Image (cartoon, rainbow, N blue to C red):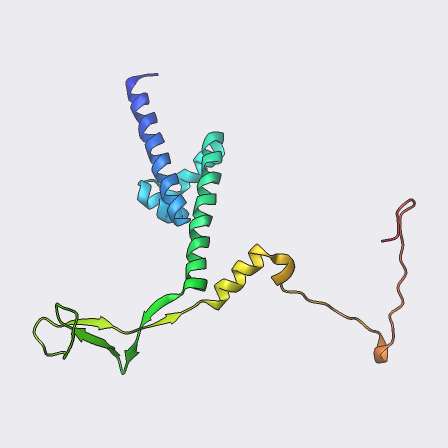
Length: 165
């Protein structure tokens, strides 16, 4: 291996590590490729050609999903503070350097925005479905009947030696 190839290999390995680190934090191929300064297609070539990279990507994917799941939990359970806007204006109180409430016209006054806690119920449902599907998954039943509500005749055909379910 020549020196040039060794340098190229080191650069490629550094880019792979950068891509995997970025993907592990954001879970998005395009953004990770941009962060690592590689074309997104390069990632797919690496996946096809390098078994070790494929394993490392699987680990990065698990980290990314953990990050996303933690963010979903935060939004669903801990909630987000959203600023209160009234008639197009941010609402809040003004305080001085010592933290005392003052008017908006007091020199050096700082606006402390009012916020309301918002929770994401949809994310909570997804977290529950994923964590305890036996309890929280959506269940559907379908009942079929014949004409005027009559029973539909069924014939159960089983292979020889098969037990009745």
